[in-house]
Length: 284
Image (cartoon, rainbow, N blue to C red; front, side):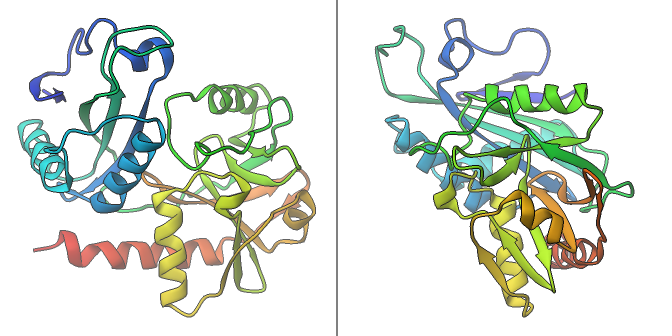
């Protein structure tokens, strides 16, 4: 049986587990993090909690003093053990504004919610079949002070995901108002040309992904140049390779954009570096 923690109350993950009047449910009024488990251990929690708190502060939430990295680590590990997750798994860590009010909240205090699930892979596995993508044109992502955070106002990503399904694609690329490519419905984007990595800069309005940051740091540590810059459709056509990243799946290589075909050499290398990086942490 799997368990959740609803603001300090641990209960089985079955039936209703969120409070009536939850503002995340009513208004998308919250932030969240998706976090990977390997060998029953949480990966990269410090960076996830840091981004969660930054997002909550941007939403003008008040975070209780007792909510810190050590507290969340303790509560997450409790759920992992109670739910019997010994290998691969994933976590959703939420901060929501406390119930009450409508568009004018009665309180800005933050409540937390943690859920854990098993995951089919214990290490980061590169996809065997490449991802097919195209550009999503129906909604542009407008840059603002919330653009870099994982808020629960996710309709742009939901509609992008539906568009991908309708076009029989694996994913679609979301652009900003200037036509710069930012990310997909669920991943950050990296373009590879002549052994150099290019990824949209945070000032362009993309999500500040924790896996994006890991890949940048691992690349630089291993002598691979990385540039954060504006990515345009013509850059995709000139690229040798494209890969996508998120905290759960790690690296996903793209096999095609329209009629363009891609290799996956850098994707394989970055997946190996990622697994090497975390193996020493998870193995006794």
